[in-house]
Length: 111
Image 1 (cartoon, rainbow, N blue to C red):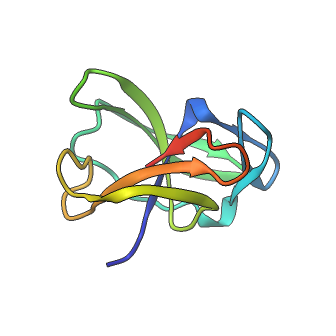
Image 2: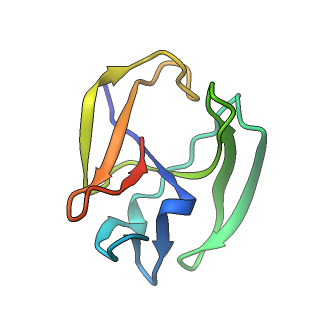
């Protein structure tokens, strides 16, 4: 299975070439790892210009508790996966998820 990462836009800061942890400023992913995949469960999908690239998908998703997140998808990220892979409540059919924490400070970055 190929791993994809969802980054919560509220938990990361966009720098010139890297996504940074909003809590501590650590590099969490290179912008070259942005990955275009759309969720059929997205409340809103838009393409934005980020990192000098056009048409980067940003999606507004909602979890089963009603909490909403703006996310970008990545094919690779520097984070610590927590717990077991879960396929329940996946925003992307056929993909599993687990929590992704900053390797430097432990702040929640995404899934």
